[in-house]
Amino acid sequence: MSKTHHKTIVLSDIHLGSAGSKAQEVVQFLKQNTCDTLLLNGDIIDGWQLRKSGAWKKKHTRFLRQVLKMMENQKTTVVYLRGNHDDFLDSVLPLRIGKRFYIQREFIYESCGKRYLVTHGDVFDSITSTMRWLALLGDTGYTFLLWVNKVYNRWRTYRGLPYYSLSQRIKASVKRAVSFISDYEQELVGLARARRCDGVICGHIHQPAISVMDGLLYLNSGDWVESLTALTEDYEGRWQLAYYVDAAARQGHLLPEEDDPDTDTAFAEEADTRQLLVSLAAQMAERATL
Image (tube, rainbow, N blue to C red; front, side, top):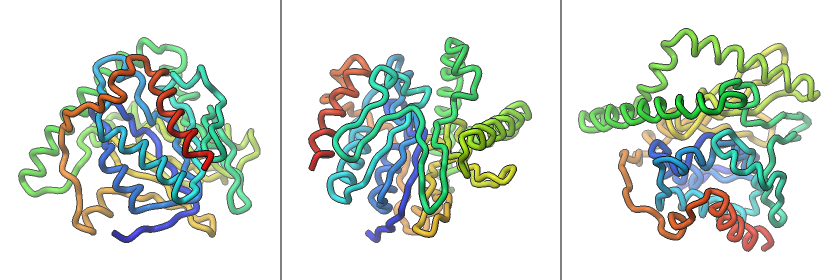
């Protein structure tokens, strides 16, 4: 399997622990794409779902082990930014483990003479920041929408059709959602300007994008629930969106959707999400100091 090396890869909104997480696909992506710096920009572990009906699967553990392999074998530096679904990280922020693993709320990333504000983006979502009960209610509806998306794509797979994000299409048709996304982008660009940055790197809204707004670069890495996308940067400072579905289809190894009912007992026994983090941190510390 051929590999592509990048200066930087940005992943966000993987939602490990939730039924909608495409953990197998993101692991395959990281096996084909290596980097010097990996930015995990929030909602990597879905603490909300783990505290409700979520379950920790073996495929979720495989993602974390793949990140550890990158740190150990390729000396990749990993920066994990806290999102709203992994708000359990608040109790340990900021945290440095070894030489190459950091957990922070936000981060100024300097690359190729440019400064980028890296933040998950929920700071400008008034629902998740000030009305958490309403956000949790909305999360239940979104989980149902993703279930519908899964059933629909099983039918498409049976018919020999490619993956299609029905949930994203529904969101794109709602005018209120489109207006929210536009306001969200403008607010983040304004924050980046206030921090004297050349651009902003975010996630949160599951809408991959690269655009120039008011002279600043707006970069959104998308997600691994609906769009299956990542941001990549080369050594000339050029950013691109990488679409897993397109790349995998070209190479003939697109993964079918599956339930993967087997839980990872090593982590499923950790009832509290904070304890899960402690368990992961112990492994990261062991490898990060190598």
